[in-house]
Image (cartoon, rainbow, N blue to C red; front, side, top):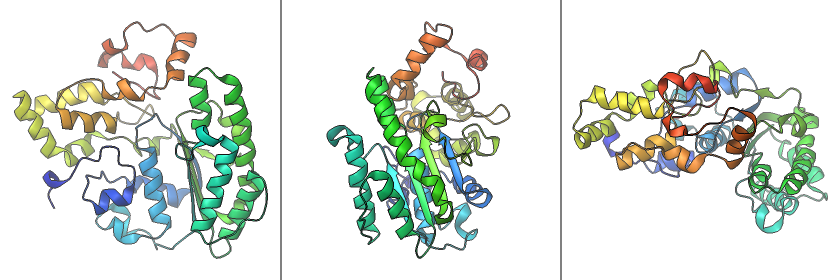
Length: 331
């Protein structure tokens, strides 16, 4: 089916929905195959709205053995497609603001056990998590996917509620500590978040956790490369050309000037934020879509307190982007 018939996946983070409902999907499974074949325990930090949750969802379908969803993608003929129990915890969706973090984790563990046809008898989130992993691994090792690991901390830092943030940090540290003793039961562990500030304290027991945040081989795991832009969005680029009455080369250069200012390793290519691209191709107007909605307050405060003052971030140009380092650079 032609790309012109693909729907733009606004707000879509479920891989199965993208494939089954004919949304545009940029194939990232070559990078995911590298993850799976090279190691088993990873940590990835990326800004909000950058594709972390879609990556987690893609991994879930892979470890559940849902091969047919990947027909036509790079990874389709690269795996044996064995089925593994999957424990997927998205901390942005467990309701900790309503019932408290400890209670929310406890309820999520019960839900996970039910989905795996297991019964948990132990009390306390650490012991229950340990029991869940052990019981799930009876037939096959477990794939554990933890998305937005730091959200219960970041949310309260942004509100200036440091005491609450510290309380949540200690709850999470205790919860995650159970992972180290379960090496023999874990097939794959993938943890994502927007920050690395609490990585040392929260994951101090996971000294074998591989941080791929600024790893050259995985710099393009999330986000859109120049080649992926041209290959997957060609029809949309042509529509923008008509709207702005410019040539394709001119529009491609304009898009590059506005949206490819992200780089996760000194030797890797710059990439585009997918949220910005999707909004741009829908609205056909050049503006700072990601910065308007995705910038965490704690990042702005950190820039004010620890770095040279930036009066007008929107005036940053391609020529002076390097000043801001290699982890996250924006126009």
